[in-house]
Image (tube, rainbow, N blue to C red; front, side, top):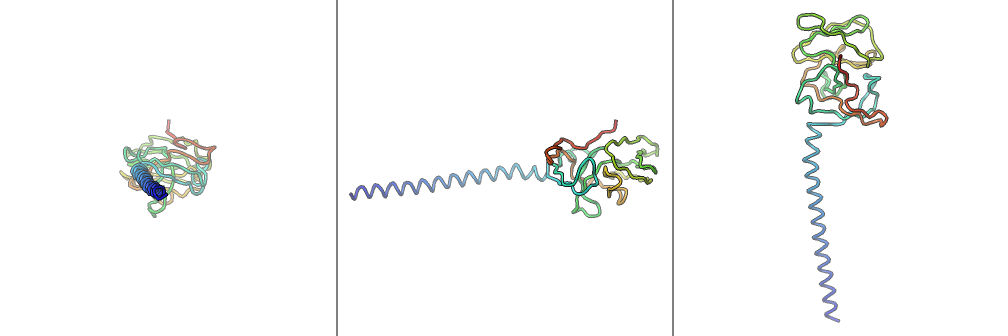
Length: 202
C-alpha cells in the first residue's frame, strides 16, 4: 500500500511538472506570436496603410458620411500626388485634424475657377493647358477664383463643391501635410471598391 501511495505521488508530481512545462510552452508561443504580429502590423500601420472614416458631406456623392476607408500611405513616399487622386491630408490650419479632398491643382500651376464653377489649369507661363472634366461633381457652386501655387503646394477641393470647406476657403496644401490616398472602401459592404473615386483626366 505504501508503494502504491508513492507511485500516486510520483504520478501527481509528474503531472504538475508536465502542466507547468505545457503552460510555459503555450506562454512562449503566445509571446512569439505577439512579437511577430507587432513586427508585421506596426510598420504597416505606421508606413503603409491605416483606417480612415469619412466625416461630413464634403465629398458627396463620391463618399458619404461614416464610410470606412483604408488609406494607402506608401504611394506618397514613392511618388507625388497626382491630379484626380482622392487624398487624405492634415488640415494646414490645424494639423491634428484630417481632411479628405480631391487633388485639383499641382505645384507650379495656377488654378482658375470661372463664375460658373468650371475649373481651368494654367501653366507657369499663364497659358490654359487643361479644362477639367469633372463627372464626380454633382453639386457645383458658382463663384470665380484664381490661385497660383508654389513649388510644393496643391489645390484641394471636395466633390461636393456647394458644401465643401477646401482650398477655395483656406488656401493650398503643402506637400508635407499629405498622409496618403484612398485605396480601399470597406464599408458599407455594398460600396466596396479599390481606389474609390479616383479619376484621371483624359
